[in-house]
Image (tube, rainbow, N blue to C red):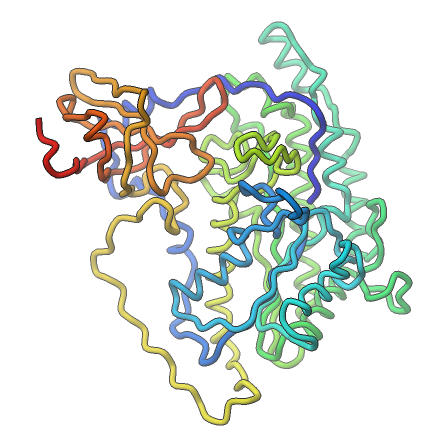
Length: 500
């Protein structure tokens, strides 16, 4: 979807999580308290396809990777990232599940509408489908097609802009609580439902929106269900799957916000945040219904599946904004951290949000393919033997930061870290606390705060590079807005020859 941001300044979040981190250091996490990575909750297929799989990743900004660091710079106005869920799901199946991959295309672009899949919109690229074809070959059909469409068609970015309570500057806590109940949104549940109904009927209300069929004045207008069915029948290869990906809830329900927020999540009051949540759940229900309708009468063993990012991000603990856990979404953003100065990063999934979605998509595709045998490739005259599957290790090693972990609180952590001098370590009677850079820490964290129960650890500028093993126990946001991941270390391995 398009960015809802204008030229305004965000409020500074005045929070820190070191107190709870210290409590967790005193009472270590048990194995049962560690959160379960999404990949382990998705059913996996018993075998791999017998031939290379072709893949198309397309859609709007929620598919291009808008919101991931360094997207949208230079001539990359589509804001594409290989960390977006489509390309990353393909990579997961290839590198972790042993799938052979054939040709692929990546034509997702920020700001685009459903009708732009078949109709020219992007300068120099034509329609999204034409662009996809130029990346592969004319007439190419794909075994897997992934996309998200609909948010721009209903003008969700404009709705989001209108809900910002930037003019509310209450001087007391009581006034803040009262002001948070003041409705800034122009939209209402009735107007939201009307726009979503128009989207599903094939008459999207957004400015410059047009029909979903090829041609601006198509003889046979398509509904959203008709659009899904057409893509599945004409762009998906026999035996393949179209994966429709939905949209997350931006803000956790206001009833779950801590009292210190005073009824605000960023610049959004709780009344407006909950209205936007209503819009997300209504859109989710409508898109899911269109997928269910489109599934009927498909030919050639094709399938249409739906991935709910609403349920994915809402799963306890919530990863929506102000959900109390590590957020999988950007809040108000100015592109400061990656020097892109790109306002469009705001209110889009970040790298972890796309990774979580990618694992969900990969698991669904993996489980879906064995249901209908794939046809042999046209040039293949004999059956290719199935690749053997290696048994999983009985004692898997800890997840290394930067791998497929979501960096949930409780996840195991192993990484090479070094002290961020000149921030010297802080020592108590029982611990040493170090502000560190780690080799694979997520880009949204400026530092990793490591707490280790050995105040006598010999750390100097020459010995400050060490292997840290432990668990992620919390994350912190400074009063200046930067984020730290908090790790309770169980073992620290200093460089050889660094003993005091």
